[in-house]
View 1 (tube, rainbow, N blue to C red):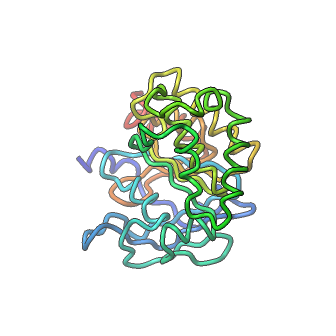
View 2: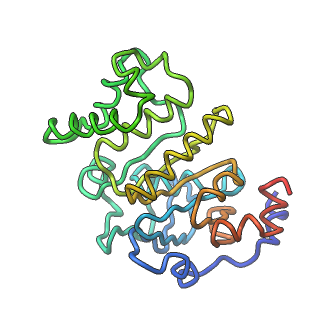
Length: 261
């Protein structure tokens, strides 16, 4: 299977990656080797993303895309390398510490709403580690003000929501902690096309208007690269190609392997 990806060539170095995120660097990964148990999935992996920039990770199944999100958030064994936010090393912080002290939120790919709790209760679960619960309520009200779809159903159980509305609730729940970085795993998975567009519009609003940094894994490579400022193509735990999203969409090798071109 690996042979068809050999055409993608030599991995870009950290200097090349910096050129794609030259200003106001927010999150940096250097020489990261990580995995689960004793199995190493990422090998000497580098990443650079600027504040309020979006990065989409694409590649074949098993390439290590979700492992990057897991490593940033604290779900993997890290064998070597470091992860920094604004120059501060966060490699070994727990997920709770990463959410609370440095503002990293993770939006899972599986359906993670609590179906029998109300929409409002689900939303407030996003702030359960806040020391000041009042702030969680204030943020929830701000979210209800912004998203009419959730506001209209705030007192109803989450199981009545459509697939797109559930994804909106999952994203909104992550926002209650006021994170600066959103890790988004497969935002379009299992959704009808109209809801996929809605979810990407919401993410675009969060990046452009609320200045969130977004790192995303997306199986729908075309949709992910159309959305993202920059993209990394992962193969076997390393970056094979990195470039602006628009440039990767035009790249014939990327098109042939991942875009159905």
